[in-house]
Image (cartoon, rainbow, N blue to C red; front, top):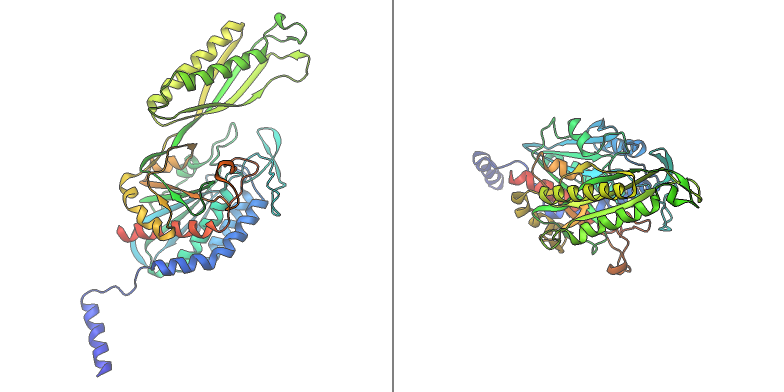
Amino acid sequence: MIGRISILALAAGLALGAPAMAAPTAAQVAAAAKAVQPKVVAWRRDIHEHPELGNQEVRTAALIAKELKALGLEVRENVGKTGVVGILRGGKPGKVVALRADMDALPVAEKTGLPFASKATATWEGKTVPVMHACGHDTHVAMLLGTATVLAGMKKDIKGTVVFVFQPAEEGPQAGEEGGAKLMIQDGALDNPKVDAMFGVHIGPGDAHQLNYRPEGFYAGADRLTITVKGRQTHGARPWAGVDMASVAADIIQAINQIAARQVDVGVQPSVVTVATINMGLRQNIIPEDLKMEGTMRTFSPERKADLIAKVQKAVAAIGDRYGAKAEAVFSQPYPVTYNNPELSKWVKTSLLKASAKVDDNAPLVTGAEDFSLYAEKVPAVFVQLGGRKADVPAATAPANHSPYFDVDEAVFETGVKAEAFMALDYLEKK
């Protein structure tokens, strides 16, 4: 009788078109994320100790490709120069979702004192510079490899395809090069298979395990600012016989700060213009002929961007004229605002709550910029922040991304892996 009932039940299930395989459960994902956590930590420490600058991520890319191939994924290398794309085709037909991690480090001398701290150097725009993963991209790579491991173990139960995008040069290529998301897109990172939606996670100094985002504009748009001044060289003892470049630089910085704080309404929307480098001269008693200053502008609308560009260019040219020099401000390498698709943003909170009890879906605007924004112009996307501050570090003094002291609580990697896995799986199930 038992055998007969079982056979009838099976037949009834088949007749009703019952699925042969169930979607991965939240408990299964959580268990898999916990199991892979030690490997994620090991990957992160290895990558952190061996950082590489944008478009130079050869060792990192080789490690990624090796791990993805070991999982049985289809792997495309040398995408967007050093990028890697892994493709996991699930056991059921469905949509295509992509997850992205950036790979590049920064020209920063590490001061964390970690046992796996970087001692690496590299060449950047003609100079030998120290290299550090000061923005957390080492953790992004490690977490996405962890997510690939989790999802590869559930391949037969996945409804659709997951594309893992490991991108170089998010911080921007050096002068004269192309790179980053723009080049990844040109090289087909979102094609074959055609991606329907995309998600990304970025670590930062927020509360550990906190996941936050906001619909629509989230991260600022960014433009690189380059100011060049051509003056007249003279002896340091006779500044009146030439153009005092130090005074020109000081006036330009003061003018830019005044524009950003006094000539635009920062109550309507935030914006930032920063001069970060000043290069002039070779000797203490020679006023040089040339001055170069570089910085960044952050805005959240085309109107504010156009207004600031016009004001800065007008002020810089006028200051040059006043000193008898030729001064010019050029804006380049634009990144658009990182835009979170409103429809995806509505349901993604439920996915994130499976990963962490601390989720904020109305996070403040972030004046940092991300070239993830370029993917979001091509496909619906959501970008999420993951807090990684250690418990013994006060929030007020926590080193921010790009600091030589930037470090994170490695326990949050498990949360990041779960967040990526749940966003991908839930999207495929819903679609």
